Amino acid sequence: MDNQEYRHEPILTNEDMDIAFFVRHDPRSYVTKHWHESVEIIYFLEGDADFFLDQRIISPQAGQCMVVNANVVHSSRNMNGNRSILLQIPLKVLERHLPGSEKAFFEVPLQTSDERVSKSLMKLKRIILGMKETLDKKEEGYAFRFHSLVYELLYRLYHDFRSNRAGTGEVLDTDKDRSRLGEIMDYTEMHYAREISLAEIAGVIYLQPEYFCRYFKKCMGITYLEYLNEIRLSHIYRDLTDTDLPLYRILQRHGFKNYKLFRKLFYNRFQCTPGQMREHIHSDTVREPV
Image (cartoon, rainbow, N blue to C red; front, side, top):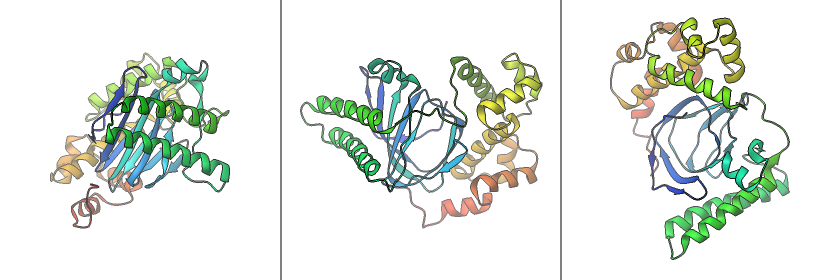
């Protein structure tokens, strides 16, 4: 569900295990609410980011590990650029090796004062860095070493960080919900630049507008209008950072007609004005991570 573009180092996708592992350079990004049908582990090598999930803001920094559980609705914001190792483990991989684990939920703290948990965190980080080192060196037989580290990581994740609690907040537990919401998000992405009535968007998944409003809020944690404006903001953000178009042209392009509302929403999300953001991006002190 995430259509944000990134620059990548070479990707290793293990066809036997269906996992993906790569190093990602993200100059700047704002990704609206979405989910993955995989457990996503992000180890930050440089920079930081903000993740909005489970009614919280989590802000991992360099040297910390962020885990986003499968089917948890979340969004993210990266204002200053970062470089990270990204590992994606589909639920079917867990289920293949550990039947019944498709609903597994993992709690991995950014940091902790608990000595036992701290040791487990260090082991997890060493495994991830070991996977990167193995791919960087590519010594003879490196694939065997990489595969062994994948299994070690899965073991550590399952043994040390599995939680009995189901995720609170917005978790899409059923295929029906994921299919419905996927249709809504695809339709919104195609038509966000014009007005979309509640009757129109509810009709996409054959619901009455009143029920649709309750359903969407329950699944996504925000109203559909809030989501629509978030989509518009994400496109406006990209044009602000990637083009020199004047603001009024950008707003016209992406369907924002109420300038006062736009200013309020933009400031609430980014803690600055559009002009301040452009100054920040183009200042000599801001450099993309190498």
